[in-house]
Amino acid sequence: MNRIRRKSRGLGPLGIILIIICAVVATTAGISHAMLKNKQLQVLREIEKTQGRIGDMELDIATEEMRTSAMMDRYELRSAIESIQSELTPISTAQLEVIDLAEGQKLVSNTPHFQ
Image 1 (cartoon, rainbow, N blue to C red):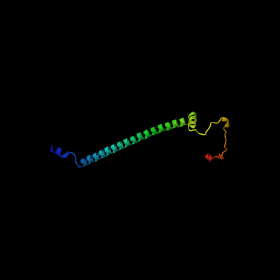
Image 2 (image 1 turned 45 degrees about the vertical axis):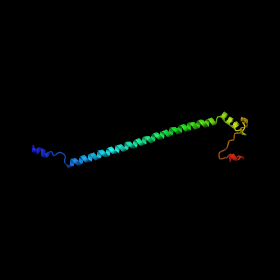
Image 3 (image 1 turned 30 degrees about the vertical axis):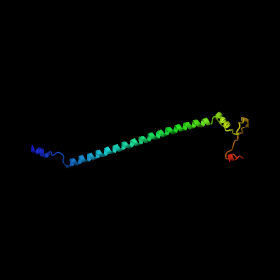
Image 4 (image 1 turned 60 degrees about the vertical axis):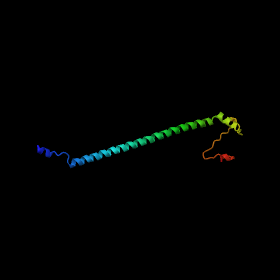
C-alpha cells in the first residue's frame, strides 16, 4: 500500500503550471469578451443616435417642403404681393413669350438682374 501512495503524488509542478496557464487563458478570454461586448453596446448606441438624427432631418425636410409648397401656392403668393403693395401686376397668357435658346447661346437682357 505504501508503494501505491508514493506513486500517486497528486499534482506535480507540470500540472500546476498547466492549471495556471489555463487560468490565464480563461481570464484573458473573459476580459476580451467583456471588452468586445462593451464595444458592441457603444456602437449600438451610436447607431440609435444616428437613426434619431436621420428621423429628425427627414421631418425637417418634410416640413420645409410643406412650407415651400405653401409659399408657392398661387393664391397665397398673389395675396402676399397685394399685402406688401408691390408694383407687380398680373399679366395674361397672351403676353407670355417663349424663347428657345440654341445650344451654346446665352440669354442676354438689358436689365441687371439677368446678367
